[in-house]
Amino acid sequence: MDKVFVTRSSMPSFEEYCEAIKPLWNTHFLTNMGTYHRQLEGELAEFLDAPMVSLTVNGHMALELAIQSFDFPEGAEVITTPFTFISTTHAIVRNRLQPVFCDVKESDGTIDETKIEELITPKTVAIMPVHVYGHLCNVDAIQRIADKYGLKVIYDAAHAFGVTTAEESVACMGDASVFSFHATKVFHTIEGGAVTSKDERLYEKLYNLKNFGIRGEELVVSVGANAKMNEFAAIMGLCNLKHLPAALADRKRVCDSYLMKLRDVPDIRGFSSFSEGSNYAYFPILVADRFRMTRDELYTCLLQEGIHARKYFYPITADQACFKNRYRKADLSVARDLSSRVLVLPLYEGLEEENIRMICNFIQKKDESGGQ
Ligand SMILES: *Cc1c(COP(=O)(O)O)cnc(C)c1O
Image (cartoon, rainbow, N blue to C red; front, side, top):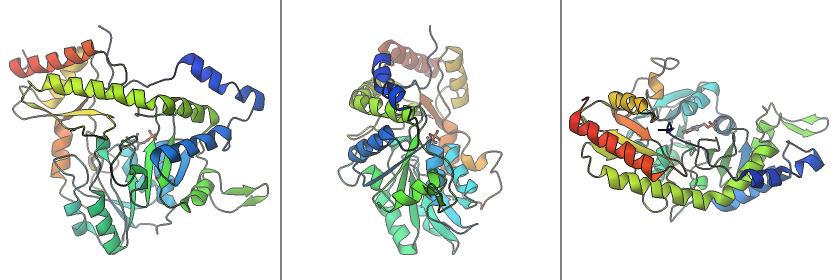
């Protein structure tokens, strides 16, 4: 059997992409906020229902620049979650700020809003939660805390592209939200990302930060980095955005199929509930203690069958070699527990029914027989 990877990039047809990039051979205009960069910012503003969309070279730089745009004093504290991709914590530390880790909720893995207030000190300037697996944080409660203490809220929304709610757009929550358009994400531009906000004034600031602060041939107004999205990436985004509804529908098919088939495996729990408005970005499962093998053993057994699941996220970022014991201690027992039990199963547009069945049968067999 062919190997099954945890994810596979959605792509437009070769012909469609080639046709779309053809004009670049006339203009020779390949980057620096070109036609397609502007067009994609416009289409995303509409799709996300957000007044401010600033595209970047990747999601990580979007995180770094979003934080930097608030000019926090060096050494200030940012309350965040350790149950995330390492990029979230890196972005805080690379801005010379201190991450203060807050535990997460067992129910959905997002930051436990009831534990935020006790972590606030006079040095706290911001809260940086993550809509992990596309599970939205308790945005209202977080905003109330932020308002009470005068803190900024910056969401790592890298997993939440395409999530819709009846109320506010995911792109307008808090003071800024950050998306990743990496090739492995639900919507991608090969590499890319965006900062979004309901505050249009952020646009100019981010423009300077992503383009060296250059505002004229002889004028540099601030110390910016280079984090622009190029035209080839923007065009990939424009193509993929057209196909997004079909991609989401197919991801829903895969998730529904997993849920059906895993219903009969009592010691495996689907961690996402996939209500209306989900983006079907990931299919995380939690391996119960009663399961006949550990999460790590299951991971290895699947790998031996050519099925690449992912321990996403293990270890929690606070326990990584570069951060361990460096920052304020907090009780992170829920995050550590989830991290020791979670396994993300393959999920992508076009994943065959046959493969889903095989993966689920395999897991079920392991639960019945253990290592045998
Ligand atoms: C993917 C991801 C990022 C980083 O985005 P890149 O585009 O890969 O730089 C940040 N945070 C989370 C939660 C992510 O999943």
